[in-house]
Image (cartoon, protein in one colour):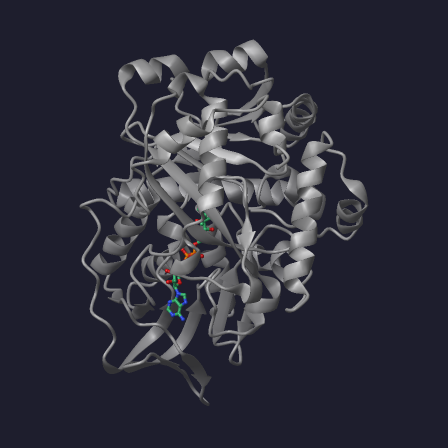
Amino acid sequence: MRADSFLIAAEGGPRSDVVDAALADSAPTVLWLDQPARPVAAPALDGPTTADLVVVGGGFTGLWTALCAVEADPGRTVVVLEANETAAGATGRNGGFCDASLTHGLENGVAHWPEEIADLVRLGDENLGEIVATIDRHDIDCGAERTGELNVAVADWQAVELADAVDVHLAHGIEATLLDAPTTRSRVDSPLYRAGLLIPNRTVMLDPARLAWGLRTAAESLGVRFYDHSAVRSLEATLSSIRVGTDHGTVTTDRAVVATNAYQSPIRAIRKRVAPVYDHVLATEPLSSTQLASLGWMGREGLSDVGNQFHYYRLTPDDRILWGGWDALYHFGNRVGPDHEQSESTTRTLARHFLATFPQLEGIRFTHRWGGPIATTSRFTCTWGTSHRGRAAWVAGYTGLGVGASRFGARVALDLVDGITSERTSLEMVQRAPFPFPPEPLRWPAIQLTRRAIKNCDRRDGRRGPWLSLLDRFGIGFDS
Ligand SMILES: Cc1cc2nc3c(=O)[nH]c(=O)nc-3n(C[C@H](O)[C@H](O)[C@H](O)COP(=O)(O)OP(=O)(O)OC[C@H]3O[C@@H](n4cnc5c(N)ncnc54)[C@H](O)[C@@H]3O)c2cc1C
């Protein structure tokens, strides 16, 4: 088997027995959901009820929709219907990078919306500020730390890309500093680092499950009713309402917001715009003070390397390293569900790459390994729509950067469903839909072809090749 581009950069990586030992005790569970603060599930919906607004899905998008709705209008009756439990989807499984970017990174925003990127940057900063204000206002204990992010190059061509990226950030008024290899290594020590880009002000690292549970408690305190294990099977428009049906109940409501992201949605229109891909994550045991000292990492920044296939990693509040990314696995027919939450080969690849990055941590044990579904669009940002005579709105497709952007997504969905024209709803990013993914049986081969082209691009020092160049010309891509 050919070494992947990361192991080529790492000149081979760790021995197999070292990887085996590191993974030997890892449990197939989600670190964030595996804690005593996890709330008891709410009872399932049973029988008929009514509400002014129904929210379908209890992840970040649904939680922000519900909370923003009652904060803006305390008299509004809001019901949240969740197929599983609060934060059981991507919301409780992610890296906890809460970023100001609404566009999956500045460069992607510049490429798609050069005319409106200044507004998108400002709206993203305001959105992050409002997330932090909500955490403070409701006293949510989610380990939030405004650490900023550090992007690292592990190959020379990536160092060149970082040098370009610093100029783009500065041109848009975003503080960013290019670091040479020794300075990067003085912040976080890995023999692989060739350069770094520090963006100090636009990322808050947090525990996503504790944020989600805190948002739920805040919403409940303002009267929002939650029903867990209540998958929505149907939305039917009547002349004056929508009837939302679950297996054992119905809610008759004036408006509905559907926030099901990567999951198969009761709204079919979402399916052509969004592809569900699985992203996988490892977490280590808490690091000893000696292990921490061997890394430095005093600024506790969120890190990611910057190939087209990349890892994101961070210190958790209890000083583990969470390490995720690299493969973005699409399963034929848009399949999602527990069967896809573990991938032995991706887990091994992640562990090898981790130990190649931090060889000084040889002997460390991974305690948790898990996966979760990301909804990606061909432009890597979310997309919105309305249905049911304008009484329902939906938003999905944040790709790998939805922890912060989901609040913005929710605010836009609320404006849309309430018929409000705002600066947000007037954005081209909101008005224009992304290029659709083809349906099956074409979707799977198209995605595999693109994934292969991405791997080859990273092997060839970032040279894009004909297929990616063609997609670039149409502003289309595949990412996690
Ligand atoms: C492994 C991983 C790492 C990530 N890392 C980051 C990161 O570090 N930073 C970042 O910004 N983003 C990250 N993301 C993306 C981020 O987690 C998501 O964009 C965000 O959580 C989306 O929230 P959501 O509420 O839209 O979707 P979800 O959290 O997936 O919520 C959708 C909910 O809808 C429910 N549902 C589905 N169908 C129905 C139905 N019919 N009826 C009722 N309920 C239904 C589901 O059970 C689920 O709870 C990551 C994602 C993954 C998977």
